[in-house]
Image (cartoon, rainbow, N blue to C red; front, side, top):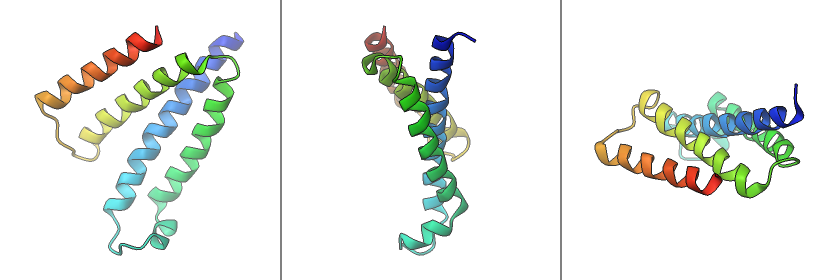
Length: 116
């Protein structure tokens, strides 16, 4: 496979990892009965988030070997944002209004304009 294609795969994997990791953090915090932070270390969602954040760092650093950060990061952020937005609504039951949808479209359009 072409090394540039692999680089883009690393970028997409990094974005997926960070998007899902953030959702796992939210899920972990919603399950906490005690406000203490130590209890988090025993929460499987929290541990999963930590693992995914480490994977994100590894994949993103690999992608930055060949991609300029001014291109890679907006695309990374756009993919991560899309994952958070979509799964936040469907998996976590967060609200979705016309204003949320309009704002998401504007954010993604801005990211697209910066990255091209």
